[in-house]
Amino acid sequence: MPERAWPPRRARPLPCKVRVAAVARYHFLTTWLLDAPRERVWRQLEDAASWPEWWRGVVRVEENDPGDEQGRGGRHTIVWRSRIPYPLEFQFQTDEVDAPRRMAGRAFGELEGTGVWRLWEDGGVTAVVYEWDVRTTKPWMNAVAPLAGPVFRWNHDVVMRHGGEGLARRLGARLLAHG
Image (cartoon, rainbow, N blue to C red):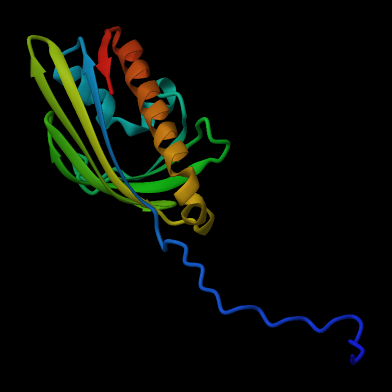
């Protein structure tokens, strides 16, 4: 038997393709039911600069551009911190405003996508629906998304629950339902 060289030669790696999703996409739908008039709810939501005062998890909001008198074209940088010990920063531009019913815009930065606030009122009770379609742009977030996606979704739900509770406190109203 021939002698083998020591140390043994390194074997060539087997051709293997591990494919990580290029981006992780998320669709969130949040509803708050508040015992408050729509106009009062709207004023708080459109005043993003005040969010850190009442929305637990919003660390900082900087107004980069106020936009027109309706807020259209307004740009804000928002930093969030939640149960996941990582601050998330992105810019949000308001593209559509139909006060006090609808506000829509786009996110850029660590999250990219669209967000739409819709408000309805009946008998002094306001329903707020927020639809958030985003993708993560950080490579590490995309790499862990197959395993951490459920944690990211849970975390979003916690942050939004804090928003509904904080808004109710800010308005001196009751949060009748959230989900």
